Amino acid sequence: RETHRGFHIQYVPLFMYLLDTIVAPATAPGLGAVAIVRLSGPRAFEILDSIFRPAHSAAMTPRVMRLGDVVDPATGARIDRALAVVMPHPASLTGEDVAEIQCHGGPFVVRRIVAIALEAGARVAEPGEFTRRAFLNGRMDLAEAEAVADIVAARSDSALANALSQLSGALSQRVAELRSQVIAIRAHLEVEIDFSDEDIRLPSRREVAAEIERLIADVAVLHDSFARGLLMRDGVRATIVGKPNAGKSSLLNLLLGADRAIVTAIAGTTRDVIEDSVQLGPYALVLNDTAGVRESTDDVERIGIERTLRSAREADLLIAMFDSSRPLEPSDLDVIRLTTNRSGLAILNKRDLPAAITSADLREQGLKIPILPFSAINLDEAVTLRAELTKAIAALINPSRPTSNDQIAISRERHRDALAMALEALKNARTSALSLMPPEIVAVDIMAAASALGSITGEVSGEDVLDAIFRDFCIGK
Ligand SMILES: Nc1nc2c(ncn2[C@@H]2O[C@H](COP(=O)(O)OP(=O)(O)OP(=O)(O)O)[C@@H](O)[C@H]2O)c(=O)[nH]1
Ligand SMILES: [Mg+2]
Image (cartoon, rainbow, N blue to C red; front, side, top):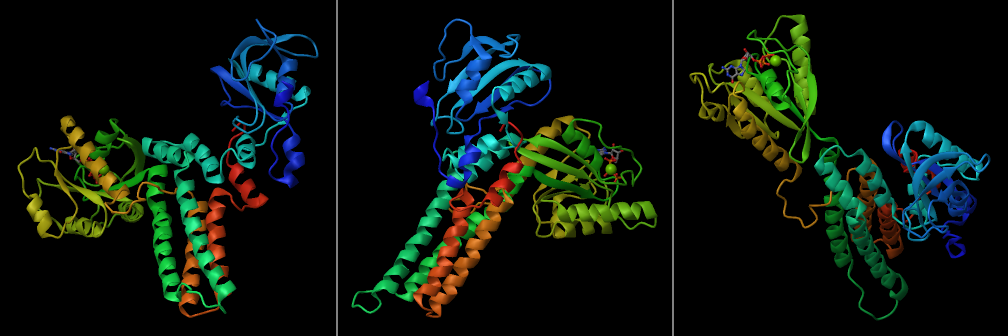
């Protein structure tokens, strides 16, 4: 075991902090078949030794699970029969010695095991401290550490896939590429600073400005991917709008497969916004059913319609419903107007009834979004509806833009803000490059852009930034 002692220290001011051995349950509190108690730090193995007796063999072998007893060293009392594993540094989660006990998943057992580990010299881990140590020990960069939290928080396949790709370093690599391009420009300026008196060919200012321009475009693509990243992370917000009785609530219930909203033949049944979410293919869809849009003198209904309009404004996607069994009315035209320049799907409902209007009539009135002839009372049509909605969401999340880096989407404000700072610095650099400022001045902005990009992966980051990031983690992560 001796050879596994010690650990890497990258940040000297944190020396004392990293000397601690930390302990915490790694699984959620509550009843479960199994719970994991995790230890990390220079004394992890020594502490495990004192509280865990392997059943069959005296020595623990790295990365091999051993059956044994968890024993309170103070009293010799057995606490649980459990499995334990040791993962020596540096190839462990945190880059330190890590020991894990898989015990029975009762809150009392878990508390007792943590308590005897504390007795034996560990201290309780702060939220996110395991991942923070992984970052400090160079096991993952900051963007990858944040991806760990995003995986835990993921609520749909698309959110999970995006977080996983960031954990595998897709975002970090892209940021590193951009950063090295920024630094290459800095190198060009360096030549100008050092050799301006000598007779060598300097890159012209226009060339430098053109390089900066290209970089601005690339950074902007990543910056703008935030909108997509958010849709993947939080789900797509869709608002169902239409005149009273069009079948909006029937549609909501059909999509949810549940009697969520009241449906009656009375126009003006729904008064308030009703929200619920549903999984559509890889996406999470947050649906808002709303009060039917029409001129109204009823106070309650008027407030309801105001809420409809607000929900429609805030939605990523509009589901505009029309009643094909009734002639077009002024409120239908209002609904068509709401869809102008918006992503969405129009539903021409009640096609089981004799038709008073067709898709062509809606087109004639200026409706631009796709139209699906539909019947909300026919359960079989739900399949088509889901397929069409999934298409509409996919079009929203992946608009066919022929850029090579379309796949990467940032989903954190911190990343977006850093990219915005990089963009601003690059724009300043371009301006000073073109106005023939001294190269030193251009270089200042170029380096500001480099450090803004570096802050995404944690190339440069203060304690305060780390605190803010890891505070959002749960204990044991
Ligand atoms: N025949 C037929 N009736 C439908 C269809 N969809 C809905 N309805 C009926 O139309 C009436 C109104 O449906 P709702 O779903 O309450 O309509 P809504 O748009 O939510 O109406 P408000 O809440 O008043 O704005 C109910 O009687 C439904 O059963 C359909 O496709 N075909
Ligand atoms: Mg309704």
